[in-house]
Image (cartoon, rainbow, N blue to C red; front, side, top):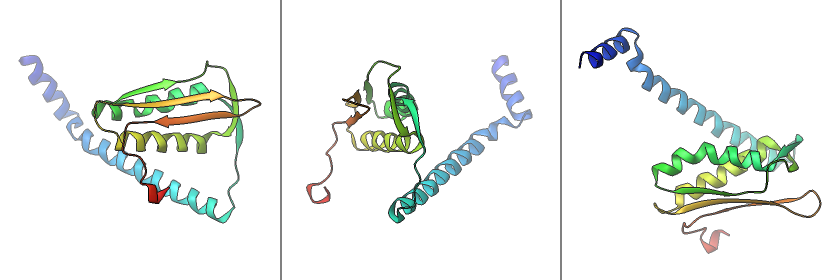
Length: 148
Protein backbone atom coordinates (compact mmCIF):
# COMPACT_ATOMS: atom_id res chain seq x y z
CA UNK A 1 0.00 0.00 0.00
CA UNK A 2 2.84 2.38 0.80
CA UNK A 3 4.28 1.67 -2.63
CA UNK A 4 0.97 2.70 -4.24
CA UNK A 5 0.78 5.87 -2.12
CA UNK A 6 4.33 6.77 -3.13
CA UNK A 7 3.53 6.18 -6.83
CA UNK A 8 0.50 8.47 -6.64
CA UNK A 9 2.56 11.09 -4.82
CA UNK A 10 5.22 10.96 -7.53
CA UNK A 11 2.56 11.36 -10.22
CA UNK A 12 1.00 14.32 -8.44
CA UNK A 13 4.36 15.94 -7.84
CA UNK A 14 5.38 15.47 -11.45
CA UNK A 15 1.95 16.72 -12.58
CA UNK A 16 1.51 13.55 -14.63
CA UNK A 17 -2.08 12.94 -13.57
CA UNK A 18 -3.09 15.66 -16.04
CA UNK A 19 -1.35 13.81 -18.87
CA UNK A 20 -4.47 11.92 -20.00
CA UNK A 21 -6.28 15.21 -20.72
CA UNK A 22 -3.29 16.52 -22.65
CA UNK A 23 -3.04 13.20 -24.45
CA UNK A 24 -6.73 13.36 -25.40
CA UNK A 25 -6.27 16.88 -26.73
CA UNK A 26 -3.33 15.71 -28.81
CA UNK A 27 -5.42 12.89 -30.25
CA UNK A 28 -8.29 15.29 -31.03
CA UNK A 29 -5.86 17.69 -32.70
CA UNK A 30 -4.40 14.86 -34.75
CA UNK A 31 -7.87 13.71 -35.82
CA UNK A 32 -8.80 17.27 -36.78
CA UNK A 33 -5.60 17.58 -38.82
CA UNK A 34 -6.40 14.29 -40.57
CA UNK A 35 -9.89 15.55 -41.38
CA UNK A 36 -8.50 18.81 -42.79
CA UNK A 37 -5.94 16.90 -44.85
CA UNK A 38 -8.70 14.64 -46.17
CA UNK A 39 -10.85 17.61 -47.18
CA UNK A 40 -7.90 19.21 -48.95
CA UNK A 41 -7.16 15.95 -50.73
CA UNK A 42 -10.77 15.64 -51.91
CA UNK A 43 -10.68 19.22 -53.19
CA UNK A 44 -7.49 18.46 -55.13
CA UNK A 45 -9.00 15.27 -56.54
CA UNK A 46 -12.17 17.06 -57.63
CA UNK A 47 -10.23 19.87 -59.28
CA UNK A 48 -7.91 17.47 -61.08
CA UNK A 49 -4.90 19.22 -59.55
CA UNK A 50 -3.53 16.38 -57.48
CA UNK A 51 0.02 15.29 -58.17
CA UNK A 52 0.70 11.69 -57.23
CA UNK A 53 4.06 10.82 -55.75
CA UNK A 54 4.61 7.25 -56.95
CA UNK A 55 7.16 5.21 -55.03
CA UNK A 56 7.91 1.52 -54.83
CA UNK A 57 6.58 0.01 -51.61
CA UNK A 58 6.30 -3.47 -50.16
CA UNK A 59 2.56 -4.21 -50.33
CA UNK A 60 2.75 -6.74 -47.50
CA UNK A 61 4.57 -4.33 -45.17
CA UNK A 62 2.12 -1.53 -45.93
CA UNK A 63 -0.85 -3.79 -45.17
CA UNK A 64 0.71 -5.15 -41.98
CA UNK A 65 1.30 -1.58 -40.80
CA UNK A 66 -2.31 -0.61 -41.52
CA UNK A 67 -3.63 -3.68 -39.66
CA UNK A 68 -1.39 -2.96 -36.68
CA UNK A 69 -2.71 0.60 -36.45
CA UNK A 70 -6.35 -0.53 -36.19
CA UNK A 71 -5.75 -3.58 -34.00
CA UNK A 72 -6.63 -1.85 -30.73
CA UNK A 73 -9.80 -0.29 -32.13
CA UNK A 74 -10.88 -3.67 -33.51
CA UNK A 75 -10.17 -5.34 -30.17
CA UNK A 76 -12.45 -2.88 -28.40
CA UNK A 77 -15.34 -4.29 -30.46
CA UNK A 78 -14.10 -7.87 -30.03
CA UNK A 79 -13.28 -8.00 -33.73
CA UNK A 80 -10.52 -10.15 -35.09
CA UNK A 81 -8.47 -8.46 -37.80
CA UNK A 82 -6.98 -10.91 -40.26
CA UNK A 83 -4.40 -10.29 -42.96
CA UNK A 84 -4.40 -12.62 -45.96
CA UNK A 85 -1.32 -11.12 -47.51
CA UNK A 86 1.35 -12.01 -50.04
CA UNK A 87 4.90 -12.80 -48.99
CA UNK A 88 6.97 -9.77 -47.94
CA UNK A 89 9.29 -8.28 -50.51
CA UNK A 90 6.87 -7.83 -53.39
CA UNK A 91 6.83 -4.31 -54.73
CA UNK A 92 4.03 -2.13 -56.08
CA UNK A 93 4.32 1.42 -57.34
CA UNK A 94 1.78 3.68 -55.61
CA UNK A 95 1.46 7.02 -53.90
CA UNK A 96 2.11 5.47 -50.49
CA UNK A 97 0.47 8.24 -48.45
CA UNK A 98 -2.76 8.19 -50.46
CA UNK A 99 -2.82 4.41 -50.69
CA UNK A 100 -2.36 4.16 -46.94
CA UNK A 101 -5.15 6.68 -46.40
CA UNK A 102 -7.46 4.54 -48.54
CA UNK A 103 -6.50 1.41 -46.57
CA UNK A 104 -7.06 3.21 -43.26
CA UNK A 105 -10.46 4.43 -44.41
CA UNK A 106 -11.58 1.00 -45.61
CA UNK A 107 -10.41 -0.71 -42.43
CA UNK A 108 -11.94 1.99 -40.23
CA UNK A 109 -15.31 1.67 -41.97
CA UNK A 110 -15.18 -2.11 -41.76
CA UNK A 111 -14.54 -1.93 -38.02
CA UNK A 112 -17.12 0.77 -37.48
CA UNK A 113 -19.95 -1.10 -39.21
CA UNK A 114 -19.10 -4.70 -38.27
CA UNK A 115 -21.02 -6.40 -35.52
CA UNK A 116 -19.00 -7.38 -32.45
CA UNK A 117 -17.40 -10.82 -32.35
CA UNK A 118 -16.83 -11.00 -36.11
CA UNK A 119 -13.83 -10.54 -38.39
CA UNK A 120 -12.36 -7.86 -40.59
CA UNK A 121 -10.18 -9.32 -43.31
CA UNK A 122 -7.58 -7.47 -45.35
CA UNK A 123 -6.64 -9.41 -48.48
CA UNK A 124 -3.90 -8.42 -50.88
CA UNK A 125 -2.35 -10.19 -53.83
CA UNK A 126 -0.12 -9.43 -56.76
CA UNK A 127 -1.62 -9.72 -60.24
CA UNK A 128 -0.06 -10.07 -63.67
CA UNK A 129 2.41 -7.36 -64.52
CA UNK A 130 2.94 -4.79 -61.80
CA UNK A 131 -0.66 -4.72 -60.57
CA UNK A 132 -2.11 -5.74 -57.23
CA UNK A 133 -5.56 -6.30 -55.77
CA UNK A 134 -6.51 -5.26 -52.24
CA UNK A 135 -9.82 -6.09 -50.57
CA UNK A 136 -11.33 -5.42 -47.16
CA UNK A 137 -14.08 -7.84 -46.16
CA UNK A 138 -16.29 -7.66 -43.10
CA UNK A 139 -19.61 -8.90 -41.78
CA UNK A 140 -21.34 -5.52 -41.62
CA UNK A 141 -24.57 -4.61 -43.39
CA UNK A 142 -22.78 -3.20 -46.44
CA UNK A 143 -23.58 -0.14 -48.48
CA UNK A 144 -27.27 0.40 -49.20
CA UNK A 145 -28.19 -0.48 -52.78
CA UNK A 146 -29.31 3.09 -53.59
CA UNK A 147 -25.87 4.44 -52.59
CA UNK A 148 -23.84 2.10 -54.78
